[in-house]
Length: 302
Image (cartoon, rainbow, N blue to C red):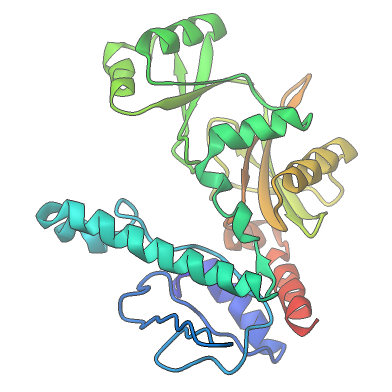
């Protein structure tokens, strides 16, 4: 993860307090200022200027690295050499994922497993997999056809626009706000529209098959970051069941599960394998960072 990331800071501090040696692969500059080399000699995996003394006991993947759109550090490069920048970032991602898979192949526990790291960027597939497993989800349309989008909005009355790659850029749309200019964007990139269900948005944190924290965090069209939190010390069994089933069917060890709870139904909105939680711990008085650090320390010592 990134050194400045609040989640990384909180978990790292707790691991160090437990006497765990922590090696941070800083995704904010990686590979950049941090040299990374893979040497294909017997038994060696080089991860820096010198070989690591043995394999790590456990790896937590907070982030795979920055993208061109996520960091101001790439603004000049985007203007001056956009194609080479995109290729550079693609090569960096290949290095990171390759090293993680090599460690995993050598028996190092990865949280989350490498096969599940991309589920947040594949939201249509994620929702389809949840639906196939019997996990309740929202009626969803993914399209780059303005006519199909307009028909979906007219049929549903109000919908929620959500990025295909997940995230907090969530907007409520109605027939009145879904004009030609809005729909024309579909010709440039596909969009995901979901039925709008009035209700509370509940965030549940699942770790190793158990819900370790939960709280009401906002409305369905707000997203689940930075709002006032009403902690749920004993979330309803139905919510716990949905969250743990959703996490399990995606192969995740740790995840944030957002569930919309309406008057007559509930539905999973998104499962995030790298959720933010520092804000939740602060606002709700929860201990997600503590519990995650405890889990990682135990796995490292197995």
